[in-house]
Image (tube, rainbow, N blue to C red):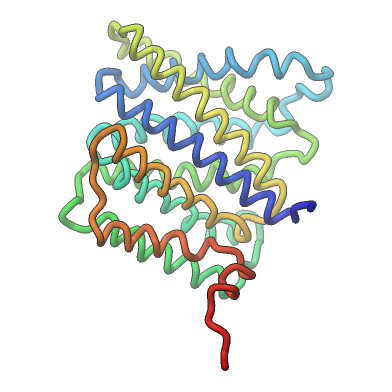
Length: 286
């Protein structure tokens, strides 16, 4: 059965967020041993190495940058978000940091209205509000840390990064989009990394490479997903990653989930359920 554009977009975002969650695990395993600017530079270089063969395999017209302005803005958003993400994941539990990262879909609703002229339905706004309540429950004041500010900064850059996908030419391929994002970030990332450079182990280099690979997977899925459907129709699927990080945090870092955290995650996930499924779960009237 052929999937609708919305269903395909949601599926792509779920796979993308699984990839992003694995990237977060790799970053957390760095344990703060790599400077944020150094991490930012190395990840972009490694991403460029991975994506270059795909970019070169295309016909020359397909390699064009498309929109210098939008691609440059998105490149700088990646740099800012990457450095703040490293700080947040170093000092916060995996699930707590990601609960704040997933404020991004909340921010995408007003941003899509402002930048794209989209008009989300009342049900989408209500579902987003329910998800926000879930995020607050997962976070809780007792778990608040100054690094939460960095996590919120990451969420803001991620929301803008995703919304601006729809400003890119429709004919521009995923490989070309990711290639130019990497290239256009290097003029800023290179001098910052050079100034703060410090020795790095092969283990940490491998973790950065894994982060780069999984991040490319996320970015590729995002580009394809937000070209399938409007932001407000599928943006809630971004919350699926919170399920993955909760599991990974428990498996890799022994981060336990209490009943209140699970309830918060449930509030985040429920609004993503397709309408037919929600109707099926509703008891029928006698």
